View 1 (cartoon, rainbow, N blue to C red):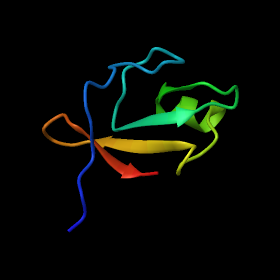
View 2: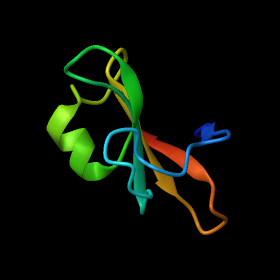
View 3: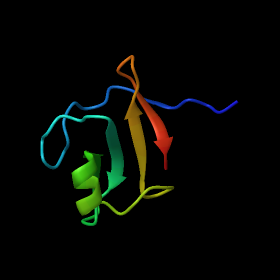
View 4: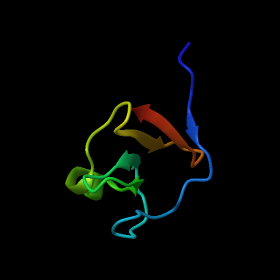
Length: 71
């Protein structure tokens, strides 16, 4: 059985553009070095990817929880 990983106490807006998260949220490293929480558009623009040392992708479920789906 796959372990479910939840993001506890997630922010409500993207660290870069300050827009609310919709379906996906990323906890990822930027091309500038620091990590943050980003929306799809900002992740695709300023982040380095998914995986160990790069970032994780979370999807909002029906209960409003953010569940790790990649990375």
